[in-house]
Length: 249
Length: 83
Length: 142
Image 1 (cartoon, helix red, strand yellow):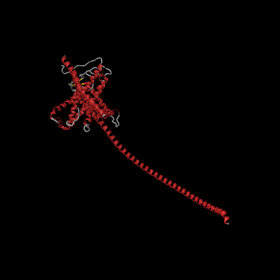
Image 2: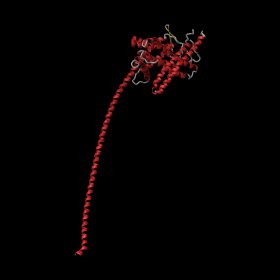
Image 3: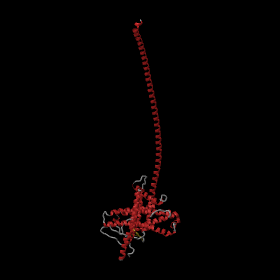
Image 4: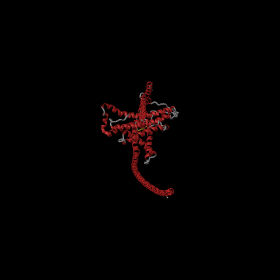
């Protein structure tokens, strides 16, 4: 692995790609920095939820208001993809996908993790590690298989040969490209964002990177939205069957 | 030791992959944005909906470039051809 | 960069755990709260709708009553006006009648006096003419 450019005199502006803070659990290796930040994200979400639901009132205020807005947002997202009839059981999955990815992305962009020194690697958004995004994408795959099987049983496989058996290889290939494109899209966007900001900070440490950082915030939010939307679209497709889908992706 | 041929080829391939991957999505994004502006001009009351859809589709097109970027990053930082 | 290891399954498990936790402490209670509020608002709205329609019927009734009263008062006024008009007309006619009557009487008296005067004048003329006649012819006749 090439280490990019190292500037020991300016610790805020160094680029490290592909270096990890390894933890050994038994004889398994895990990326410690990913887990540290993801625990932070999870703690943030759980604390916000507890604050919001500790004292539920009819007229919401403060934290409850904010979290109700978030809930409304993810409910609308799920409703738009799955339809009024089906969306309720899937709100926790799609909503947690959105919230987790969104808070992860923004925590990577907004919190100056680089001030905290790790022996190796650096703290960043959990979503810029391919393990995280592949894990989430595989969960989406499992979710839509579960949706299809629970709805149609083994008849779910009929969709592979539905219009014509000639498309069978393509239909099977689709099941592999879906998680692949989902995970690579998220991973690439977040990593690219952090790299661009890193390179700009390396070149001009003051003010110039700000617009790119803002763009990065925007992209991060959109990518979280895209991930959740696509998860909803795939689940909807599995629920409805192959013939009558008009979803674009 | 890194073979200089492999190294230079990797750098060139990385540049080409991100460069070429940005051409198609660029054209596509231009088309989509143009059509969206046309749609807004024709139907200003549908602006919110059009903008939401436009952002989503732009993100999809953008991800094509990102795939190229991922390949470029692999060639630069995790090159499988360098022992 | 692409080193997959135990991070992947652990992250998946962690995510599922987060989903379960959030489902218990976030989605369920807040969804319940939102739906209860929706019910409350809907119920209140129905009630308010009812009250509004009731108020509207009441207002309509009042309006009708008001119009009725106004019409009645209008009729009353018209009747009174007509009565007054009649009285005025009667009085005027009476007065006119009286005036005419008086005028006629006066005229009659005037005529009578005139006739009387005429008659006395005629008598005078007669006596005078006889005297003249006597004076002129008397000598001759006598």
